[in-house]
Length: 442
Image 1 (cartoon, rainbow, N blue to C red):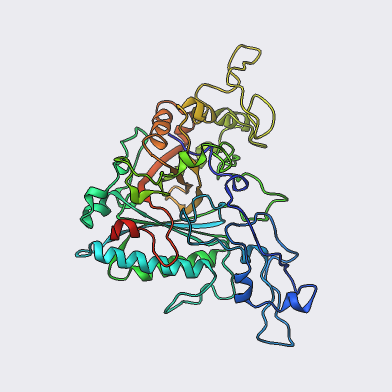
Image 2: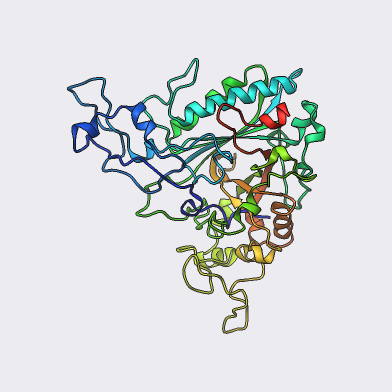
């Protein structure tokens, strides 16, 4: 039931990156130093984020003293821009950002389909502006002043209860049926599910918070906050080259993620546009997201020797390579035995159980954040993984994998599933439109 060995690799799932060719510092020419923020945003990358590309300085350069109105160029991280409009919503195949917020809302009493449509229109307009590095249309808080887009993405989804609240039960996909109970679940209902779901990610904490605050304010009297979770990842440029991230257990975490270049990637992750009883036409180009707050029992985990931890996972802690040898991307030899005739990768090793070929081909696009929410009274850290996975059908993706993990994953004794949610995330908005428009106006 642990979901932590195969989360996302930023180098593998990044959208095509067409980032601006800019420098940190004062720049080598007056033209470089004098590009305005608005002009820079207009020429920044069209669809993706660059990883590991930082200039000579970690911050922004001082503007030219000859012209107070001129602003120095942003670092590549600040300038990176992800497009809001497209076939799919941003934040699914976008490379993992260093800061994230996941939030659920419930519609207020009396709010129905009309109010929900107006809210999604407001949210979409705000997301488009903020993702372009522009302030909110009204009452901007200035939290993100001086920063560029910083790879900001805002993603919207609908929970099972949303459809009864808006009179759209006939449009509710069968794929959105509630997840079954799992043996390892210790779920807090107050921090699970919800009518509406929002995911925010950025490579700057203030940019991410700015978007979170704007979305919360836009909700107004239409929707009230149900729960909020905050997470983080390693920052782009923190390593000498793009690498698979590590989780809070210190494990390389994301080796087995499906990759956009694979022939069946879209079939596994995105809903086809034709529509079916399982997923209606309004979900075309969309995906289903499972969100789980998985607490890591780090005090117990850290008592294990490195060798014992490696046998739980089935991979070397230092490199992420399978215990059977090679490098991180080497296919594990699941039949290999040691001198005593024992399997080198144990039967209950997490990496063995989560492999697609051990689960009827089930594959998930994992795109998580780590979290740390303080300490318990006994000093144990409240920390772990905000597990976020994407698939075209959760009944063929998440559910069979989780059921198998439930039956005998060695990692289960070191984690606890404390919150859960399943949401339908429709395709991207057309220019001039808003997310969910085909559903709410269809």
